[in-house]
Length: 139
Image (cartoon, rainbow, N blue to C red; front, top):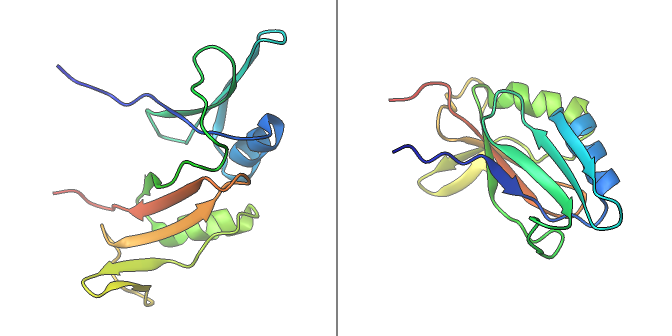
């Protein structure tokens, strides 16, 4: 039996601000923005190429978590430098490209192979922390 991760709930304080950040800044596709009167609103967005979506909002089916309390959500790209450039161009306050080395994280060097070891991080407007890892080939 396959078990697939389909949705991650991200706790946010302002749904419209989060929707703008995830769709306009990160470029995630807007799957739906569903309103249920005063009892709920669910926004679902999906990173390009992903089988897993991000959901935020309030109401039935949305577990309460403190906005900004989700840490360590990870995306994977095949070119971390291109991802850094795209996020920067879109206005995301993104950290520099780092290498996970035996001595800890250090800045990436020009031309260095970053497959599996290249990372960058950023926070959404609520302080939820994201990491992006380069995986350009898999064993």
